[in-house]
Image (cartoon, rainbow, N blue to C red; front, side):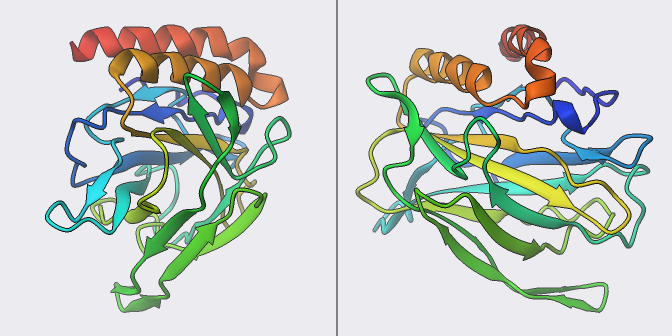
Length: 240
């Protein structure tokens, strides 16, 4: 993975894609969160390509009821102080106001054809109880509050992820989820994006990744996208 820890919140564009043929990794889609010296929250990875952790697959395998993957948010140790509770929202950006987008080779990038459900069980961490959530983000939604997650407490090691689910009749393609994070005393992040791959080949997913990265950046980080796409290619080569 390539860390871009010197970028500000304006560079907070995350694109993750993966291969359907791979089993969903236990950690899920890794969404790292950091803060810069001006206390602006952002995602330190401009572009991440991880085909092991970004696949969406029929689940459970024996008697599937949904298309499912996972996503996990991890604060960067030493930057966000312990005890800082971060909140998460599914949201769009100025370029693409919808919180859930979709890409396939035939139609390009547009609204998701199906709602995408984000779910997390309630938990108690360090004696503090955190409510769970079960939010279906509709294709026309521009904002959905997901509340505060347990591992948004400024500590590492809590790698429990939230479930990402699609209905069984969802078409194959790349499902793009916009996220923003906020916390008391910090500036809210810009929208960054997580992309789960349901059934596309590696070459199709690469084409979609490039199209998404070109379409969703915040206005001030457009000049960074060429660097981001170059890092994507470099990351893919090094993962071999």
